[in-house]
Length: 141
Image (cartoon, helix red, strand yellow):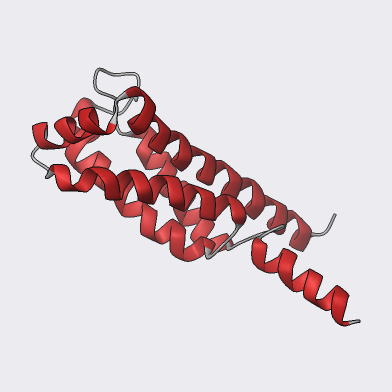
């Protein structure tokens, strides 16, 4: 396998991991905390509850777009501020380890780093752009 192929598959693995984690974050807010509970949490830390649904939609929709490989760099860059906000407003004061009470900031920090890696790597193998452009080339021949 060439270095180019390795990079393409590394970007794919990174993209799938990041997308899955954002979907899991959204589902946690929907199924465990509930939107009302998440809204209450946001107000308890001084943020407007108006952020509840945009945050859930961004995480879930962004995760789906990442998995599909649609505008990976833009989506990764757009979702990173949510994670940064979770460090600043929710987890930063809880210490490094996510197992600390209230969850520390290590996990969101790793996801921010992974978002940065995804921005640098781009879509990778099997992105929708590559799949559809490959189909177009195959049907044009």
